[in-house]
Length: 192
Ligand SMILES: Cc1cc2nc3c(=O)[nH]c(=O)nc-3n(C[C@H](O)[C@H](O)[C@H](O)COP(=O)(O)O)c2cc1C
Image (cartoon, rainbow, N blue to C red; front, side):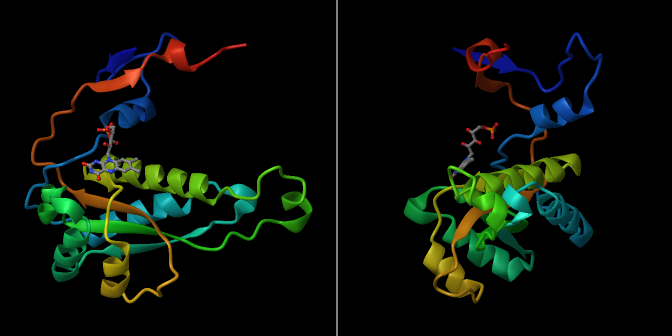
């Protein structure tokens, strides 16, 4: 069952939660205004991603922030495979998260039942970046389908370099927060 979460909500335990409000305000933005994004705002977005947690603090990532209008226009075309995501033409910056080899601490890594945490770690960094953008009033949209070989060529990245996330950024043309369709908390959480 889906429930609707409004942009601002209150929990009984806490009258207001600015962090929950930020989480509720973040939404995929598919219509960007003409307003450019200041370089320092993009630095803050990258900084939030840099601070994300990772297995054994392996930090299996690096970031490319595409901000020059010419490169953004070309990177936008790489996100429009199969004619979708036309709104990328109006993106003002694109954050790419590159997966880098994770070096887990051998003494801990050997005890873990899985050695591969990088995808989850990078997902956390991506969300941190989107929330930081929202905190600055900048809209974001994660793009799943994009032309990785073309993007690598555009940005002079080696052929082997995995590009894990493509996140379009720009100020929203329409700042209205849509209701969120999400499964009900009771369906998802078991308090024991
Ligand atoms: C890995 C991933 C890939 C996505 N790819 C696209 C995409 O190609 N185009 C798009 O418009 N939205 C894309 N989205 C956004 C999702 O559709 C969106 O996050 C989801 O519907 C929830 O809506 P919200 O972000 O507004 O809360 C993607 C999201 C994720 C996490």
